[in-house]
Length: 358
Image (tube, rainbow, N blue to C red; front, side, top):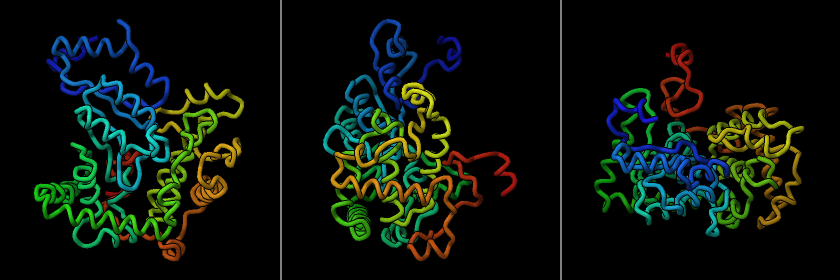
């Protein structure tokens, strides 16, 4: 009912929130007088809503389906240099993976494109690895790089920035200044991208760098049994290519937590309903034959081995690596900008945590 919004007068941006799973996509796109879209369009016709969009943590294929429906004015999604969050390693329907093609298609359709969390979900760049900080170099900070990559490389319009204090905006504001001088900034940005890609190729091998996340079924496909295969291999890449142990651990831990909702004695459909739309996948277990499920990958055996390695390092029975172990692997952090452990752009924010650490 519009009555609860009446005091606002109108809503500028009405969003279908976290449209990720197949059934949610179907409901969002459904036609008919009693559909959600019909109600939203009626409000738009009446001037109560200016723009209709959606946010998502879905697979690249589902996001593309929503974009290509041409029913939305804007999209909030994840596209980051170091990986596209839940869409990373999921087929985009155009021969690639992740959300880059989704961003390009949205821009072709003149949609507004909002990048969710390039600083945190894009690699915890307030706590960058030493390897990443060195590769980015002295002319940009990792946070400035993430923002400039969003605006200048991908052409996205808006980024979200979590901050606990005014100083947390400093590097993003510096990125704005650099963005205003594109002629000077573009060669710097392109140099950073070349160096980061070289780092990845050196540590993963050129073939894995280019093809390691291709042709992997998404967690929404029945054959994956809800397991985030591409997401897990993304964690492998973050650690081995870029030394991003903290980022990989945070991401894989979320899969472990979601997996607690998955019950082996329940049918697949019921389990998929139980998994949240914001994290619609779970961690690895022995319920599937990895080599069989990954048969479209250029090296199924290697991919399966690397998935198991990630689970052994980051899974529920693993021990956190010591600083000595991280240094030996080249997975140490360069610095940590957080004034306390709780950070506004993470899922672990809690008032008691802030009070205790401040």
